[in-house]
Amino acid sequence: MSGALALLDDIAAIAKLAASQLDDIAAQTIKAGTKSAGVVIDDAAVTPKYVTGLPAAREIPIVAKIARGSLFNKLVIVVPALLVLQAVAPWFITPLLMVGGSYLCFEGAEKVWHVITGHHDPGPQRAETLDAAHLEEKRVQGAIKTDFILSVEIMTITLASIDSDQFWIRAVVLAIVAVIITLAVYGVVGLIVKLDDIGLRLSQSARFAVVRVFGRQLVAAMPTVLLAMSVIGTAAMLWVGGSIIVHGVHDLGWHWPYATINAIAAGVAGGEPGAVQWIVTAVLDAVVGITVGVALIPMVEKVLARVAVLFPEKAGEAS
Image 1 (cartoon, rainbow, N blue to C red):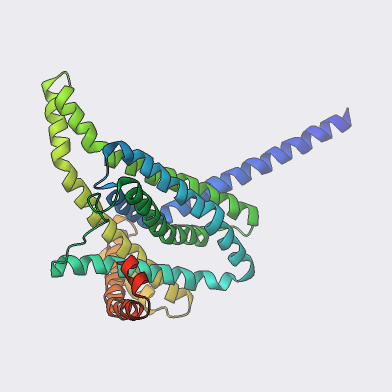
Image 2: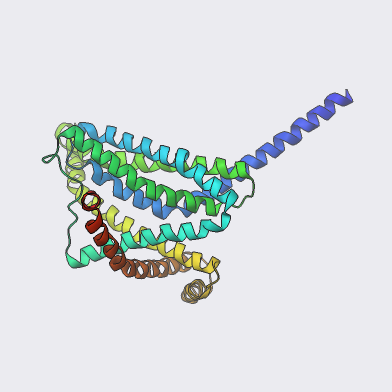
């Protein structure tokens, strides 16, 4: 009898340990997921352009293909590589984050520069110049390549946000975040690309006049919605990129940018931590982001110019 009671005690202790570990995983997942929110917003804002100019019936299948490629990127390539890197060279995580942050700053600053100078992005090649199957394949490949860069940044931010030394907890949290973020991003993208079709159907066949009016307004609002997503995505890139740079140089020993931003934000907020301090910090991080990005634009253009000279076919693909 005493042996059975001891066994029950052991089972209860194991159950409590498992429950605490699950709570830890859940807490780490929520924390890590929120840290990468800015890059996720940009990912959701970028993807809809890859289905423009294609038949409406192919929009959801294309989004599904990109989502599968994104999940493969994260679970099969990025997560294992980051776990190995964390195990053998953890010091390299901060520089890797800063490289990704610099990329985000460059992309965001380039978008702002194009708006200022009146440059219009021609976007993905349209169906008039390629057959539909070839165009769809090129779009999917291009989207998955772009997603890979964003996936590396999302998962690196996630890894850096996990406060646990246990390998299996890091692995589980990374896998959960990868799945949740992929489903969330491409679920939202799928909804966005079908909103105009939903609005059109409502405007034509809804039973009540008020619903038909709503459908017409939904169709008319889509260009504004996509523009707003682009603006939000650009702001998120600059904010997240700048924040990564500021925290990176702080971790590497240069504390002035981090301390100055925190001091200004605390001063504006009157020393009370909260929404005001967070907003001021985010704005100042974005200022750092656009400064870094503007500085990188001529450097990247020089590199691309050299690529165009040495490998003209590669430069044509990049453009």
